[in-house]
Amino acid sequence: MTSKRRILVVGRNGQLAQELALTLPTLGEVTCAGRDAADATQPAKVRSLIQDLRPDVIVNASAYTAVDKAESEPQAAQALNVDAVALLAEIAKTQGLPLLHYSTDYVFDGSGTQPWNESDPTGPQGVYAQTKLAGEEAIRASGCAHFIFRTAWVYGHFGNNFYKTMNRLAREREELRVVADQMGSPTWSFMIALATSQILAQGWGSGQLFEFVHSRSGVYHMSAGGACSWFDFASEIFRTDPRAAEHKCKKVTAIRTEEYPTPAKRPANSVLCNDKCDATFAIRLPTWQQQLALVQAQVQLKSPAQ
Image 1 (cartoon, helix red, strand yellow):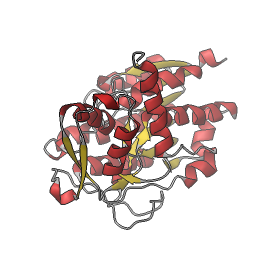
Image 2: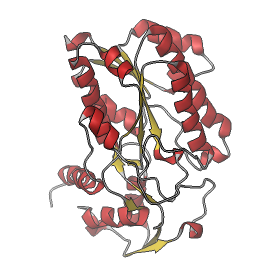
Image 3: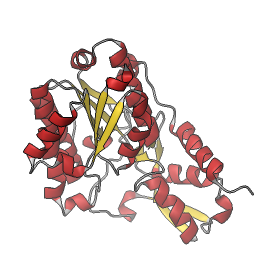
């Protein structure tokens, strides 16, 4: 019975964790544990939590994601993106549990114009990206059964993200300047959570979740189809916003990366190739435009009747 399945989601308040809390209950009993549950400085506490819950799978949706702030807080990024991940992987290996974990398109250096494959050489450009890659490596080194899902430009109704920032700024400023020479694939956090649920459902449907994950362990790219720049994304957000009449902003200007300096360097091209995920699980996320249309449709449904 699905009611006997137990899923531990590490993370509670992040945008992806909140989406997982909505999608995973169709599969079993879900426990969302806050960041303190993945505190690498208290390994006994983390082990006790997992031993008490006796989950069938660990889904790690906790991460240090402040890309620029990580440059001045490398220890904090290391603690959450590497040390805590290594601890979860070690526990998963010891207790024979599959571990699902999320990583980032920023592990690549951004060179070239082609979408990145899972087997392509990595080259993280900042502390955030470096620690996320180190977290991946810790999982692989542990030998636990695992899926590492690299995603990209994650946004949605929860947490802090580009989509929400643009919506706020559109109501505060008359003109916006947005970088137009960084390419990626904006991905709705709900779609990542939904795909995760579908993959776990396949595993349980096979009759043995652990073996399903163990035999397919590795890195998978899971991002929206297509590609755009931050400028393109912002322009489409404004064009499709059902509350556009509230916008104060009347002009969006495309700028180069060097015109908007940030503490952390971003890859110019972080578009991911999702063929492996499709070939392995028959799952391919909709295009970024289709996903944004769905997000805006939700906004329309929640808006007061005109």
